[in-house]
Image 1 (cartoon, rainbow, N blue to C red):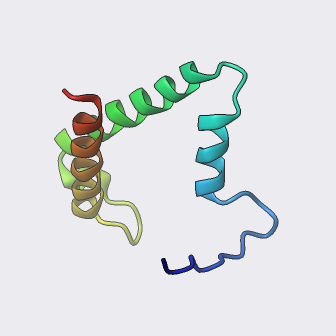
Image 2: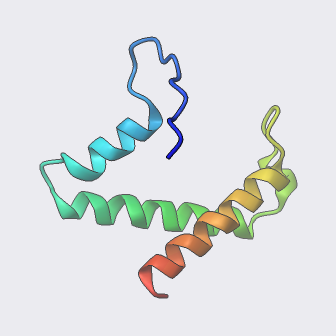
Length: 82
């Protein structure tokens, strides 16, 4: 398995470490996982339905954001068996 490239974060937690921490170490336990998955599902669904032009931000185009939202929404939907 290839090693992940180390990214300099200036001492801050990486996004992956942050997500792993809130999914595994919150006092609310499994409810935190449900909250995160539901938030991701709802945001991905909203972005997947939106007009791409409304999501253009700097160097990321709305079309790229929409494709990412569609991909993530499909994954969450499959994961939840919806």
